[in-house]
Image (cartoon, rainbow, N blue to C red):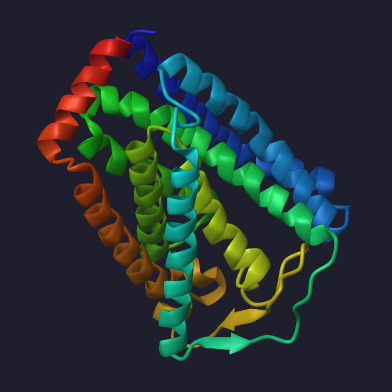
Length: 285
C-alpha cells in the first residue's frame, strides 16, 4: 500500500474506532445488563474490543506495521513488564507518601479472577493493535518517529477522554501512558513490549491492588482492596490513579529511565532515528 493510501486508511480507521467507542458501549451495555458482574464485563469487553482488534490487525497488515517484533520478543516483554509494573509500584509509593492510600474492607479472588486477566488482555491488545501497530507506523512514514509517537499518544489520550470523560490531569496521564507504549513499540518494531507494559499496569491496578474502580473492587475480584481518598490532586477522586499526580510523576520517571536506556543501549539519536524512518518510508512506499 502506498504511503498516501495508508494515510487515508488510517484516518478512516481512526474515525471508525472513535464512532464505535462512542456509540457501541450504550448498545452493548443494554445486552449485558441482566448478566452477573464478571460475565457481563467480560462479554461487554469482548463485544467492544474484538472488532477493534480485528480492525487493528488488518490495518497494521495493510499499512506495513508489525504486530510482534521479528526477534527478541522475550526482551520486549521483560522490558514492558518492568516499565508497567515498575511504574505502577512507583505510583503506589507516591500516593502512600501523600497519605491518600487506604485499605478497604473487601479483597479476595475466585475462579473469575482469571477471566479478568483475559478480559483486560483483550482490551489492551486491541488498543495497542490499533494505535501502536497500525496508526503509529503509518504516521511515522509521514512525520518521523519524533513527531508520530507523541502525536499518536495524544490521539490515544484524547479518544479516552472523549469516550470516558475526565479532566486535564487524566488527559495528561493518558498521553504519558500512550507515549510510554509508543516508545516501547518504536524501540522494538512491534507491540509485545507495549502490550506487556499496558497489561501489567491495568491488570495490576484492577486485579491485584483493587484500585479500579475507586472505591470498591470490580466484578472479577482483586487480591487486595486498596482505596484512594483524600487530596484530589493525589487521590484522583472517583477516577483514581488515572486522575492523580502520582501517576503523572511515576510515568515521567519511567519515561526518563526508558529514554536513557534506549539512548545508552541502541545509540539512537534524533538524526539516526530520522535516517531509520526515511529508510522505512522508502521500503514501504
